Image (cartoon, rainbow, N blue to C red; front, top):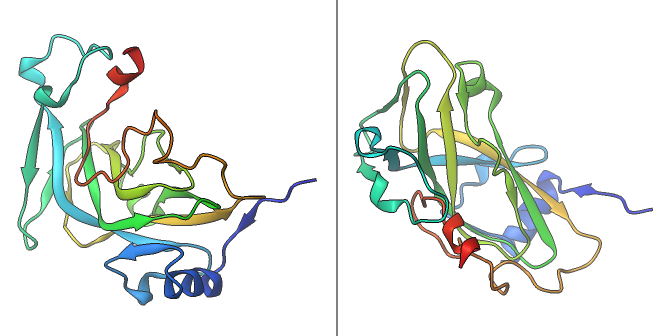
Length: 190
């Protein structure tokens, strides 16, 4: 029988101190009992709806989106029903024996903000900023601020190191990504 082991605060701090897990910038006050809070970056990618008749997953979509960069003291307003890509402030690097789950914070969920649509799993060996697939399920706009705690990252130790960790696989599309990275599913077709 294989047990799934979630890392506790003490182990998270030890692995970061040893450099086995990298979180940059690191703020020890963000470490919780069984996760670390991640903060919102200042870059957002929105779909330019007036230029899109349909998204074709066989084609690159970056030209269908617009990058918005806001200042640290400004707010990004996410409107009801809107879907945006955002990024974490933190750059992370996982070893080949630890995977992670990114989860929204309940305080934001109570405002109607969904932090990730379905892409909440982070493979062992991943390195980069995490792209957030955010939606506003509320009926009113919500302001989001760079640097605010936006999500939690929980670490899962594997039964053994991955034979081929993320970044070493030919299909690793988002390795070392920075900023809100649009879908690269079109690469699956080539």
